[in-house]
Image (cartoon, rainbow, N blue to C red; front, side):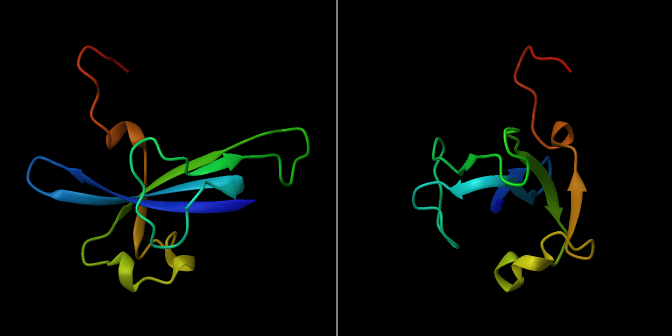
Length: 103
């Protein structure tokens, strides 16, 4: 399947951290999703499919934090998952909880 990577800036207490979300096992990207495109809230990133496992639709979502000093604009896309460039994260540790929500 296809993987679409999106970049996100998340404000922490004292700085802004950059994260990359990998949306994997897609049948195809969403409308207008091409390298360098800016997506807005509500835009379709891609369409889940059953490539590689007929009849079993699945989606992979992986969050990775960009390491200090690493720049996405200088990066070969194949290196996004390189441990020298990004660190895998648990989204529960990245996104703030909605008021009144609990884990």
